[in-house]
Length: 316
Ligand code: PMV
Image (cartoon, rainbow, N blue to C red; front, side, top):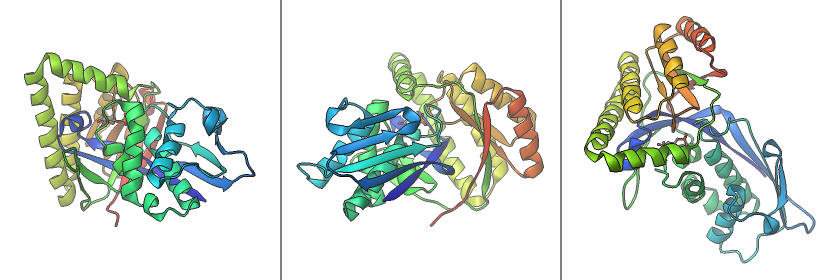
């Protein structure tokens, strides 16, 4: 049984989404995590992750490991006293710790493949894959908003609001496909640390940070309207406005600032960091091939490690 899940970018509203403001995220389908599950002859559950140099038996592993936690989530959700003998091999071409949701994608791919292999159709639904991935995300993140697991499980652009008792998850129309460059600073950054720092700033200056979160929420709501209307100029402007607020939230970095500035100088319609920040990836919106070439060159000249292009479209 083989299953995969995509990387993701956050278009609008990272960090503020943890505090109940709306955010927009989209899958990046050309970078993926893939899990292959096969029965084995009496080894128990064996997990092989060549990219992480890992090959271990579930029962002998550190139980706080994310892959182990993933298997335990499936076991509990399926109500199984023991998991059958399975070999789970995981590969990913999503860069880790760089804001592209690699952890969530690996978890989602494993859940889908194991559920498929065990004939647990309910656990392989988008809703269950998302919910179980969320439980595992808590290990990476501390207080995840739920947006990462949602977008990698549903593999659609989503408008997301964290709230009790149920998050708002809406898909929406992308009137004109959005052509984005995704550029990696090459600096790895911990989501948990960035999210924790924002929390400390919010506790120390609640009025200022609530206002910043409100600003991000307003931008995300306006961006949804602009995406539905196909107004790429407005979308770009909103991205750059969102970036200004993220700088104030202390989650940008010199490398991210340099890439954002280079993209804008080269004519991008808008640019911002994507994900937790402090490193990882930034995104730049371009209108056509000519603009894409100019912005790509500018990003590489400003020390981007990799630049990939992704197009965000409506999906049914
Ligand atoms: O670093 P990433 O891509 O996992 O992004 C996390 C997004 C945050 O809004 C910063 C945190 C969250 O849980 O939503």
